[in-house]
Length: 177
Image (cartoon, rainbow, N blue to C red; front, side, top):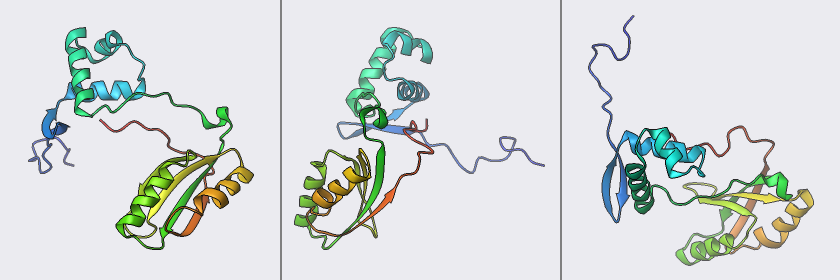
């Protein structure tokens, strides 16, 4: 039985990963990926702790961290809040089909949906449906009010279809290194 990684030719070459900085693309090395992986696990690490984990001295680690931030590879830091702890344990995925998809309607819909604070995520999709929204509420009654008063009145909406989230199997997973 042949083993992968033996003497066989590499038919799947590994391409370097890149990050963009002001429209230019720079290669991202293993140390940059280690920094990103560590920060995705714990965004509150000090530079000293981060440097120790990725086996760099503090100054080079700090330079790399600032470059990752400037390039947009790191777009921010935030606290992850448990929705149930703040009274928002009800979650629904809402599929939105638009009546029409002209530019003006799409822009107006996206502006309006971005103003609904219970919408945690809104994604425009290819095909049908046109959008996927991730929505939270306190309970079913609060969701019904949100649905009737805000979601159903969004510009250009033809149909809303809701699916209730039973449980999260995978949530807030870090991006793969």
